[in-house]
Length: 437
Figure 1: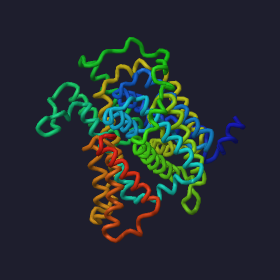
Figure 2: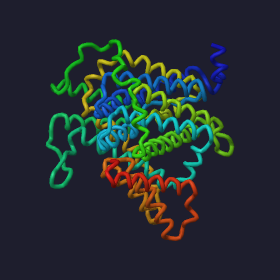
Figure 3: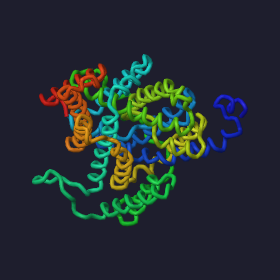
Figure 4: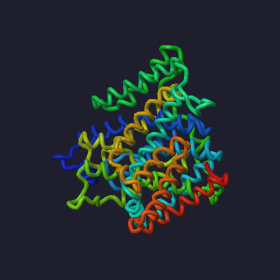
């Protein structure tokens, strides 16, 4: 135990084993919903849901353990929300490509990420993007996955006259709306694991009302990963038409992970006097490697989870907390029968709640400044309306460069932003000529 304490820096005063264990447990409970939600979303891409359950747990275990043992931080990793939606609804369904090719795109984005991280370019890209567009990206993805959530609960349906409309009231919809209210109340009261509690409550309600069948067993060996593991098609992903999707994966993961890292690092008091994060390089390397491994196993981009902040609030300060979180993902592998009975309407409210969290900083965007406001607005609105995260990013970046040039604010556009604008123009051309979503 003494060697363990020395390795992780547990000093027995403000950093104790008890606090680390409680912090790791809290982080797991707040993010365990991904075990149910990720298979539901990626399952829509035609992937085996049983295998997805196993892969989600294994990818989360591996990524979190890397964070525990390399940078030794109390940060958990798992397949990212928004990124899994981009994988399924933009790439596979929107662009009509095979999920194997989409996994190849994820792998390539992770490989480029590793290179950019090692040579220090990753942080320079972040600084090149205006804060308004960073916030707009998160908000747009929030609206996008909330839209998917409402669709999965049957509240939003196709309408030939108005494109979308309200669906007929059904028992699953009522259960989902009640579950949404329950999660919102639990979140308001700061109840740990509120989303997980809501998913379980809705599933139980569905069983009671005859909408869901009881599992034959509660504990069993996890399903095989074979249907999806190592099935990625990298060669097909090496297509000029997929340059923009690769960039989109990189960009979204970049800001998702960096934003999370900065927020959690400040909460955990891991910054120096200038506000810098000494371990940021190692953390980004862990994030990039986790993405590579996740794509090989058969899931969309693995990233650092903001739910780590809940564990930090409980006292987690070292990688030992992440060891606890990772171990709980490993134990969760035994409960695969429970995941199989969770219906789409039970996971749908989780998407809506996550969307609320992702859009909450929209108030920081200066919409009165049209050079900032219009690109941000286009980014936010076009993601759900075109059912494509990459399309929203494309119009946001390109419009920012064009408006800055047209209004004489060319100096505020960095060289890196010009490159991003050029990539956006390529994506728009490929999309308009039928090569993209």
